[in-house]
Length: 185
Image (cartoon, rainbow, N blue to C red; front, side, top):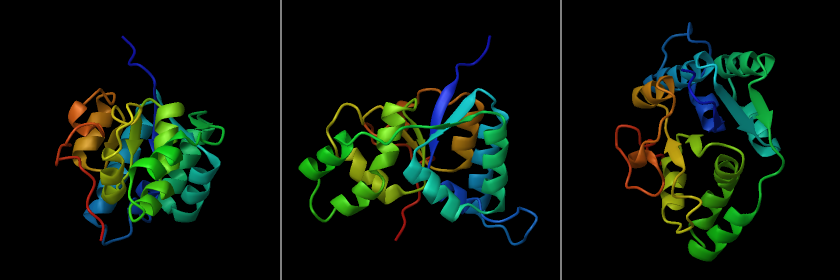
C-alpha cells in the first residue's frame, strides 16, 4: 500500500541549520539533526515541499551546501511547489490576539502558518521555538491542527514513518519536548 502524499513546509532556518558540506568538521549536532530531516524528506518520495516567494527568498539567503543540493534534487524530481502569495487571515488574527510586543515575531513567520494551512498538509518544520509559542496562543481553529516540528532525531523518524498525525506536536496541544523547537535567545 502506497503511503499518502504529504505537502510539507520547511522553514529557511532548517536550511541554515543544515550548515555547510557534512564533510567539513566540526559538524554541530543541530546541523546533523537538520541534515537528517532533509535526508528523510528527500528519501520519502511521496513528500512534496511548498514554498511561496517570501520563503524561497529566505531559503536562497540562508541555504548552505547541503540545503542547496537538497533543493536542487527535489526541484529536478518535480517535488517543489510554489504557491500563490499567502492569505492574510493569519496576520489579522495575530494583530487581534497578540500583544504589540509579540506581534513582530509572529508576523515575521505568519507566511509559514498560512502555507501550512492553505497549501500544505498542516506539516511545518521549523526550529523557531519562540515563534511556535506565539502561534500556540492564538485561538483560531485553523492553527490548532498544524504540526510545528523542529529538526531532531525524533522528527526525522516521524518523517521516515510518513509524518502521521501526532497530536502532541500540533499547535493546539502542549507539545512534546522530544520534538519541541529549541528556544533561541
